[in-house]
Structures are given as structure tokens and as C-alpha cells.
Image 1 (tube, rainbow, N blue to C red):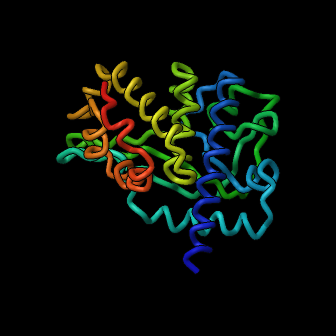
Image 2: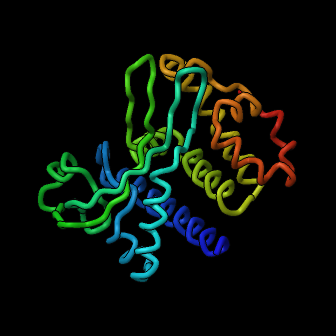
Length: 232
């Protein structure tokens, strides 16, 4: 039974990453803001990824389970940021049949955008609290901004996520971590207004990011020492 659950979770992660990649690339292609688009939905899962009805239902079971799990991506003292999974059943808006957008972008694409009612959608948010104030930003939007400025690193970060969660490919982990440090270094001035600690090396990164620390345990024996010396 455990193996069945593992397969379902692995497929879920892979499907979400493929969906996000499609969303980000089409956001750039159509030059849209993509402030609050879904990460994926049942239409994309069926029509683009080719999932059967059974696999779509299994996807949503995993989504429901993970939405109840606290995924901490950054924690220092009283400041914490989580990855929040939100399932919504509502109308969706699609541009040219390939890009699922919010109402703002749909209005900007009159003639190309249509509404489809009663659809299950998954939204991913980076959700946090700083000094008593809440911050919530769509993860697809964040990745789109990264792809605009750091296209190579955007791809490397997706590969990093896939490697840590699925394949354990040490080369992709090293490349992804290197890119992450590059982004942290060049965004330090902005990030320091929100985060009390900006990781400068791999040890600080694993301490401040509980989920990253947990995932990297699976690749320690595969040569983790290779990038232990990486730092900003």
C-alpha cells in the first residue's frame, strides 16, 4: 500500500511540475502578468498530460492530502514561509486553449480568452508572516518573474525540484543549488527587507529551509559533499 501511495505522490509532483512549466512559458509567450493563475486543473491534466479519469481522481486525492500538510520552505525565529496548496472548484479562464489565467489577464485578452465553468483547479502560494503582517504570492507568478530574469536558472530550479523529489540526480541538484545562490545573491537587497537571514552557504540554506533540508537527506550519500562548499 505504501508503494502505491509513493507512486501517486511522485506522479502528482511530476504532473504539477509539467503544468507549472507550461503555465510559466505561456505567460511569457503571451506577455501576460499572470498574477494569480492556477498551477494546473483537471482540463490540463486530461487534455494536455493525457491522464485517465482514474489518474485525475488520484491526483486530486493527493492534492487534498498535501493541502493539509504544512510545507515549510523558510523559517527563522518568528518568520515563516510555507508552500500552500489550494484546491478550488470554479470557473477557469483559458487563453488560446493553452494558458489558464486569472480574470485580469482574461480581460486583457478579449477575443482569445474564454470561460469554462465548474472545473477543479490547483493553486500554489508562498504564504508567510513577517512582523505580524501576512504575505501571500502565487508561486507561478514568482517562477514567471524568475524565468524573465534568469531563464537558465528557472529551468535549473525545476530540475532541482524534480531531482530532490523524484530522481536524486546529483548533477541537477548541484546546478539547481548554484542557481539558487545566484538568485539569492543578486536579490539580497530586496530579500533583506523581508527575510532576517539570507543563506550564504549550503549549511545555512538547509537550516533556514526545513523542506529543502529534509529532501536533501536522500542525496547525501550520493555525493552531497560535492556542493557542501557552495556559497554566495
